[in-house]
Image 1 (spheres, protein in one colour):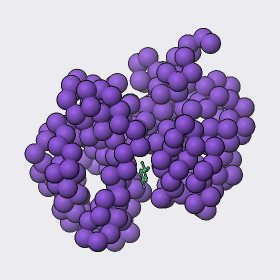
Image 2 (cartoon, rainbow, N blue to C red):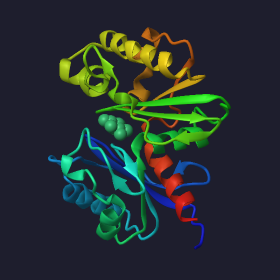
Image 3 (tube, rainbow, N blue to C red):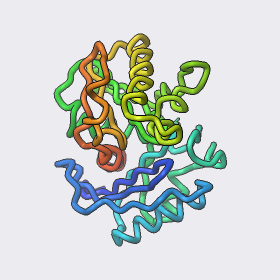
Length: 250
Ligand code: BGC
């Protein structure tokens, strides 16, 4: 197979499905991002329909890489915390390949965001252990040890104050409860303290939608490790999904 550097990257999220054509060599986008709100209920058929529309928008016939907001093992979805339960045990790669008529590779959304940040963003020069947390509808977590991914780490679901941490400290929790940034940052800092106590990373990268609003909360965050916002902001997922697909199909 040839090694096309142009790949369509798609980030399937709890509130929006976003796509763009990515230059997998430079990590830059060839096109603007195209976003469609996540259909509710977010069933496999409904999401496949949206992914098809995104591929059609770009008149796409090449490789597609996608990030999905749940555990994905060898192309099979295993969990679905913020999308419909019907996803569990769905062969997402076959479903999306049929919908788009393109070869599709799918991994967990935080894992692909991690690939993007490690290759082109804030983790590029880090040799030690890097922890990336995507903050959006859920809390996505990914860890790289000496540049190697630990796949499907699900630390967004540790228990904090008797509940799932992402119900307490995600961006969706901030919006749902109308918390101001300082109050939310206090909660998020508690979460980070637990993560640090359990995993001791050298660098923490904050990704997802809040990464472009770092001026609103970074001053309230205190961690032992160095902490930085994602450089690719919330495009890390699109870029990383494209990079992972290119590596998979090469
Ligand atoms: C899911 C993770 C996902 C994260 C961010 C969590 O609820 O369990 O797999 O990475 O949300 O979307």
